[in-house]
Length: 227
Length: 218
Image 1 (cartoon, helix red, strand yellow):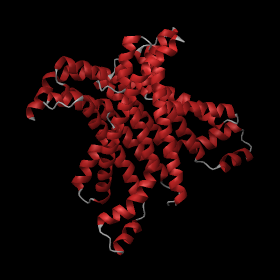
Image 2 (cartoon, rainbow over the protein chains, first blue to last red):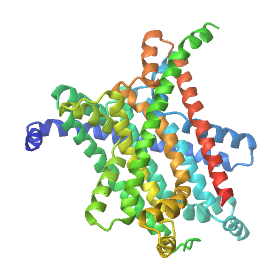
Image 3 (tube, rainbow over the protein chains, first blue to last red):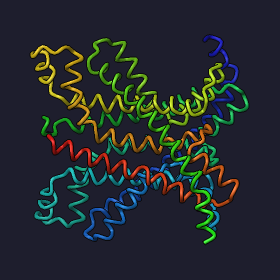
């Protein structure tokens, strides 16, 4: 056991430097993916709320489809099949787009759930006081809805961060690929994969805690059936 | 039409891979359900701080680290320590550990949603702890947990694709091999996505029917 940990100091500076570089790419990749997911998710939520039956159906179809396909299949398809249609994406962008596409399905459901949790009367009252529909949304609906949305959105980001590790399989130079490279050079896979797990944990765990804290905070003072 | 023929030629192998994926998912589901249930019951009824702390550490580690890292750790890491698991077993062990953590949270939320009177009533009519759990608490808690459980099951089927990274010959791995040997890239990945959808959508729909059925029986 002690022998196991004695390996760390010997390689520490090299490993940590390389993993930190990878972690930076992972952070950027997951944030880009999340931004795309948020944009597309908002669009989908809007489509599901729109009066057009066609738009609604398309949005639901897209969401269902995205939820029924593994991220890895999506990533490989984006990375390997698009070039034959004349569009070559780098591993990074194929990854970000894949994460964004799949994430958007989850984000859309979160946004819709958040909006649905408000009583219809909120909007009606806002309109009755003379606000335009846009003002009603930005001044009345959204500030209330965002409280319920924030914790699950944080969880969605944590999922995207973890899922970004799959981008290593399409040769994106992120944290997991850096770990695999080190593991195959050093022949110390146990050491490396524990360490890389710790890297992910250090980013993801505080965010999970924050999400839970926000949930508790926002649900306080709000009367529900369960009291 | 050449495409169609090529497609039909590839289909049997991909379907074989889909069956392996489902086998892995099924084994994982069984292990993760038992593991999750045991952890949830311990979390709900144990008064030992040590037990709570240990389970909380396990759950947080499993849920905040990517599944791919767990699989690499179990497949490559353990072989470094001299424990050589075959790839399929490593995948099942890894996914089951992650699943136990996810389901522990799911089942715990189900158990803790019940009123304390349920437990007291069970004691009052002379049931022992196991009987209270078996006949009173679990049937209600599992019903509450069903939607989250359904989510986990569909997520699990998708996550079996990660096992391809440690060369488990399931559908994703076979597809990647087929791509390198036949160059039918778009055809194969399209087929793979359709096959996954064909596995997942009916299961999701089945769970929704089950929820309605149980809801109606209430």
